[in-house]
Image 1 (cartoon, rainbow, N blue to C red):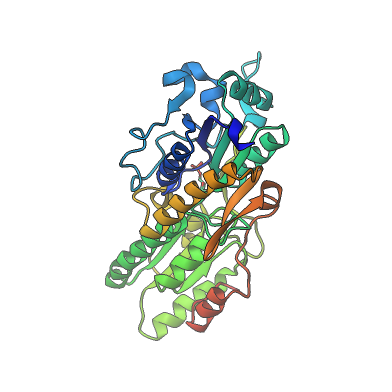
Image 2 (cartoon, rainbow, N blue to C red):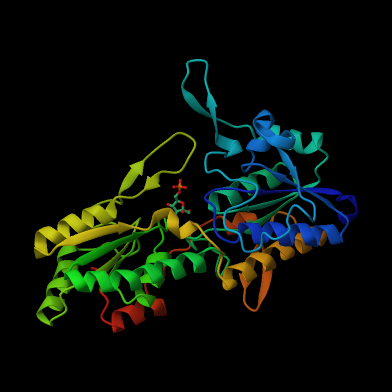
Length: 368
Ligand code: F6P
């Protein structure tokens, strides 16, 4: 099996996360040790499906020089997109409307045409599900889990998460002083999709007064009571961390936009909570949406190391014939999990996890 691998492709899919370039570098350097040639597919699968839009016919030659000095650099040198699912590729119909078309067979054909023997797909749940579908069609695939949201089951953690939480916590530290100076309530909305990991870890580390997460639907009066109770204790300001996927007990999560060929965009819950808290407490209240700032910048040491370990492990898995698997962190080691299992369910925050218990013991409310 392994003798037949000569050329491999690497791609990055979905939203970017700090550490992607470190994975690319580790993958390439480890692959070169096997004598494999490496190519990066531009923008997830778009380089293969729309080669005319890209340099080098859609495939970036990944030589030792091409990956030099990128370990600490945010973003991805290959580009990425969350609109490039080849199973639901946004395609213009004769009527001028956008439709979702299954173009996965064209991806398989392009691999043959370019004599690419395997794919290392770096991505979140959506990208790993695509990788699984391509594996089912006979492509040799290894998945590398990526997301700042940390919502992938089967891996203890994903790279990007630590960077996002570290930055968000620093923001909370900064907001404390201005909130206190103005006697204000600051509502800080963070990313995380349908999981509350970023909000929870940031809120506890940054000593928030309330943390609202998708896993625990909130009652705004309970949050408002927390703010009022603090005022009575002479604490005239409060910090509320809200996950973008948080929802009230009697409502749904806030959606900004739905579009063909992509997941719904969440957002707006911060403003909603701000307006309601102002109305109930009468206090001056402001919203800060950290949004894409959480995805930018240099990966922390922790994320770099996981990313490098994942990249090297992906090549090890391929060399050992562990096909159709995702590399997963299982301290102190990495293991390989079948892609089907890796993508079967989302990792939510367990309601009885010790970080939730800790938060409650510190007096932080979840609005429940
Ligand atoms: O999954 C990563 C993530 O950053 C989510 O936290 C967020 O909901 C989403 O991507 C935003 O994606 P976009 O790049 O489309 O704004």
